[in-house]
Image (tube, rainbow, N blue to C red; front, side, top):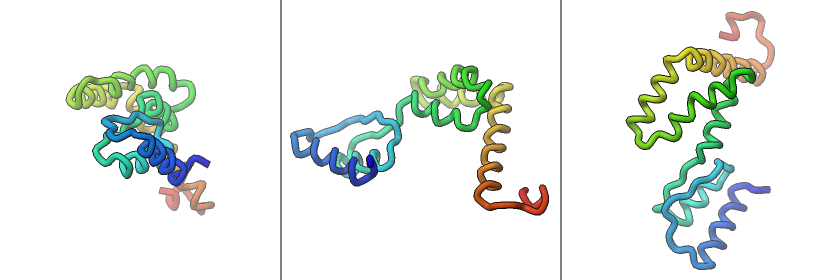
Length: 127
């Protein structure tokens, strides 16, 4: 029940109760919430919290590697600036876990396409 219309109502209610200026909102990426915040307070910066960013990243990771990958990517999300985050991402990307995560991500996307498109006559048709 917490869609875009619901969150627009929550934001409008807060604004009507006196919240005039919002600088930063850290949320979990609920559908319609960022849009409702931006519509109500256009100058607000909306960002997804680190925990939810990491949790979303785990969709593409083999279950047995999740703790190691979460530990390895946390410095990316907690970096003090964009340049440090880029260096941390590059270090992860080039690591053994990063390469393995890329393969898992590709496999995830392939499984998603195969599932949504139905049956294929052979492997070449899938590719």
